[in-house]
Amino acid sequence: MACRYRLAAIFFKALAMRAFTTLTRCDVGMQLRNVAAALALCHLPACAADLPTIAVLPFELIDDQHELAPAKVEYARLPVITRQLTDGLQSRGLYRVLDTAPARRLIDELRSRETLRDCNGCELEIGNAPKADRVVVGWVQKVRSAI
Image 1 (tube, rainbow, N blue to C red):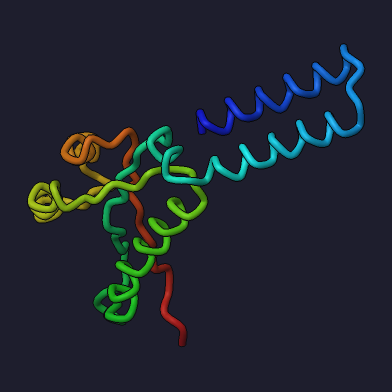
Image 2 (image 1 turned 135 degrees about the vertical axis):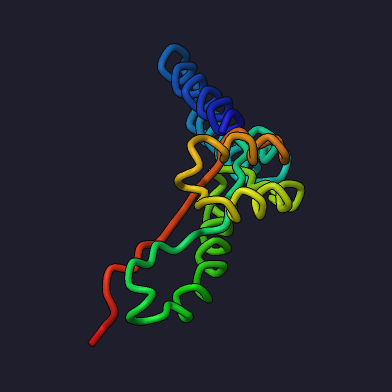
């Protein structure tokens, strides 16, 4: 995001120059083309280093009706949801998504004791393994089965 802010500052500086100086139409067009080219370059990987990092933990399922209707299909969807969120964050350029493989053993250990959403801050410990700025703990709650 810092890259975008720097480019926005260049754009506003170009507008201020236009207000205080008499530029020809050709000069203004050239300035705007340069700014547009700079904004387009912001999506290159060089700016990805400026993005905050995030670790997306595996989604969990809250299923209060597991005795009545096992949630086999819902459990199979959890990795897909995790992948969709990861891809969405990365493709929109909001975050640089880190691989949680370095913390896999810790994640499995903590999940064996309790759900990650109830572990009271263990996500911070998990986020330290890949050195993430932020950590996503997600869950889906199954509220009823269709009759």
